[in-house]
Image (cartoon, rainbow, N blue to C red; front, side, top):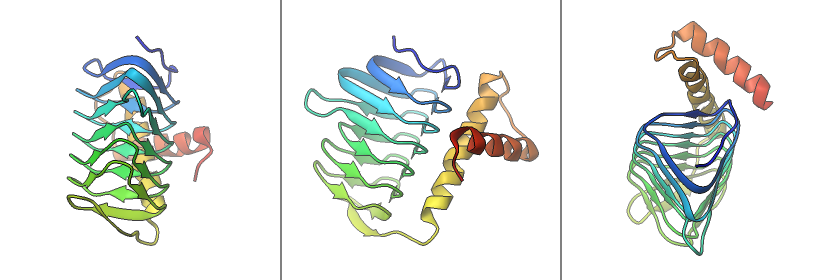
Length: 182
């Protein structure tokens, strides 16, 4: 069973197997499955792997997920690289050897084919995925979303299942300082 820093929130219904590392202030939510049994999986700082996600390495491709990444509910991340400050939309699929460039958003339901390289700051949509230009301010929006999940996870680590708006704002400021982002 992998061991993680004390600042990581691991929901009791999340499963982690094999060679898995997770950075500080990250979170693994209910029914997420992180399988490093075929190869290494490295998850960065302040990253959330949300409900029912599957993250799986292969014998040929490990998985690297950067800092401040949001992997949305039900997404499949398989043998690929996701750089810092990305959003992987709900029920999207990223396949073996793909690289999602920094600051990119993969839309809900998109399928990124094997060995696709997505340039930084892109918006990716469709089946198979089409790469489009991102929007101004996209990285800031991604950063705020990731930090809000890190703040909520902090609450869960303390045994609280809800968070008020003012508490969320204070926790987000603390996370920004601790991760030296902003």
